Length: 191
Image (cartoon, rainbow, N blue to C red):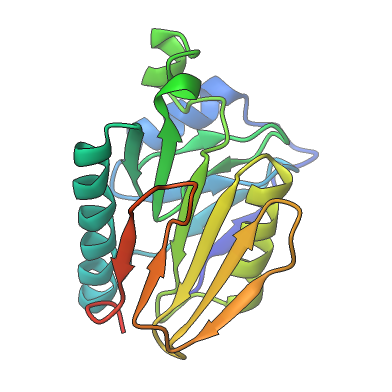
């Protein structure tokens, strides 16, 4: 099943607080909201997708515990992007400097900040064109580095601010470059 998008306009508009409450009232449903206010309902991933996601979050978090440069988030975390969209990447990272500018209330709900780094992992039900648009939206909203990992076709697309997308075919690992120093994701468990 692919994601379903519902447009409630002009009937009503979900405020930020309404959207947050909707998510809290339905913890078993994964929601996002587009910049236009459309509600996106996403299906859960299967076992293989969940395993892959856990592997990459584990690797990112283990690196971060050693480097102690920021905060790691799972796919359950939502972020209020500058364009008004509420998005939940499969994994995200924000530097301590930026995270610590937020108030406790902002940190508790959907933080009004674009992550510094995001990973989107294509599941069996994901449309590649939609994921590419999502990565571009992240970049347009200030994300510095983004990875789109496609296990099905064994391709990684690397998004960097101000640069064309780099496509890697069947890489065995990818690097966080200077942005995430010494972070390397081993793709053998993902592919």
